Amino acid sequence: MVEVKLENLTKIFDKSSVAVDNLNLEIKDKEFLVLLGPSGCGKTTTLRMIAGLEKPTSGNVYIGDKLVNNVAEKDRDVAMVFQTFALFPHMNAFNNIAFPLKMHKYRKEEIKKQVGQVAEMLKISRLLDRSPGQLSGGEAQRVAVGRALVTKPKVFLLDEPLANLDAKLRVHTRVELKKLQKDIGITTIYVTHDQAEAMTMADRVAVMHEGKLRQLGTPSDLYDHPADLFVAGFIGSPAMNFMDCALEKRNLLVSAHFALEIPRDFAKEIEEHATTSEVILGVRPQDISLNGEETLNSVSAEVYAIEPLGSETIVDLILGEKIIKVVMPPTYHANAGEKVWMTFKMDRIHILDKKTEKTIA
Amino acid sequence: MFISSLKTPPEIMSRNIQWFPPNPQWGNFVKAFSFMRPSLARALLNSTIVTVSSVGLMLLASSLTGFALAKYKFRGNRIVFLYIISTMMIPSFVTLIPFYLIVNWLRWIDTYWPLIIPGAVSAYSVFLFRQYIITIPDQVLDAARLCGCSEFGLYWRIILPLSKPVLAALGLVNAVWVWNDLLVPMVMIHNRDLYTVQLALAGLWDIHGQLSDLNLVMACTTLATLPLIIVTIIVSKHLIKGWTGLSYAKR
Image 1 (spheres, rainbow over the protein chains, first blue to last red):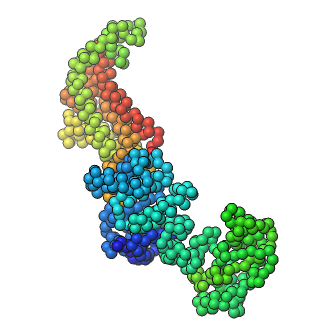
Image 2: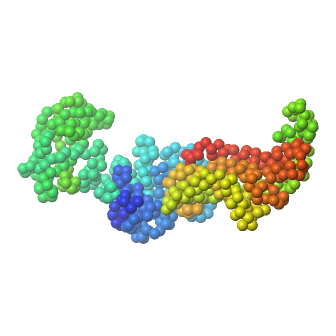
């Protein structure tokens, strides 16, 4: 049972720049947890503190019930794969993978056996005598994973391991990594800024922003029930559309450009929980449909541009000064400047408090 | 120089320039060994001891210092670095007399030490090592740490092997410098048995009054140069990398 627990973890660089702010997080045994956030949100710093490469300013790190704040990185039984892979350029792949075993004074035959097993598992047996310079990005990545896993660590840390791979390979590798993690059943913490990686690989995702944990949940939790404006805008592609408006009368959302009737229970939530009547309406591009003529409870807008992607078409509309993105089937066609009417899937809309930026409904 | 060492004295003085003597006097090289005082063999040994230990110490000290300055954060890192760099601005002649006084106070006159120790500290080498090591990504070192490598292990197993081009380039340049140095040995060494090759060559004038046996002088000089040429050939592979691409690159 290897759980990782972070307790009030804080890291402040140079006395003023707060990288990680009072982070509390529990990673379960054998779980694949993704730390997701834009660059500079503190996710890599968090990972480095778990690895022991960075000392927390305050707070505690537990690995499997044991407080490891003062345990040296090499005694924590964690392994890490770096964004640049960080292979040792003067050693061939075999020696790279064997390096941690040599450091732990394994016998020669034992090293050979263990490296062989890991290489077999990662399908890199034929690459073992190549130097890092002769490996492609994907191969180097697998050697780096091999080097991390060869000592059978308790916790597996990955810092944007796919960022240096080309797009096609990335999609392939994330499936492989996920499968590998399930096969060996190792507690894994994975850092990325790519929400697609997070959504596809994670058991749970921890969204971070400005050093703080914004939301922790399963990928579908985050997508369907984002906790606040940041998470709502960060998860999903294209990003969720936001429209400022206010609740008027019983269940009418009104802005300068539209008046929209919303279900009564949403209105009730706003009345009960909003700090003011000012709210933000959030609708995912996938939850809007377009019509050539006005329909019941629709909002009119002007077509700004069309982005055909083959599998779908993204339609950019102008509503006031805002661009609203709508995902339509690939057969959809409209001309720029044309007037269209949007209908929202009412059970899929999100209402956020404008002042606190928290989700109300 | 090499061709002259194969000639007879009259052939050297002759106005008819001969590119290669009809009767090459290979025996000159044998005679050369007993031509000097101390013997050429002894002088070569002295120079080798001094050069190898001086350069060895220099590479060790500079790479360690460079590693610390490049990869560790500590208070005063920049100041120490600037201080080391600033010593490059002082010409060595200015410090010669104080240097002699210190050596005398240490009772190091007529020992190898004044020829070895000063060369072991080189601001330029520290600078070069630091600039090179700074280009080795931190992630590589972090990866080694997580593999269970100690801090000295980082230096020994990662930094040094990756610094081969710098080691070769600095090693050679400093070896040439120490090997060819005449001034310091001349000031510090009076005992003929401790003469370095350069000092012994310069001393030929004293022994022979006038340099009548120029062919033997040339033979001595050739033999004195030979070790450096051999070392250059051995390290030349790394040398070019050392001077041209002074940064760690994916290899």
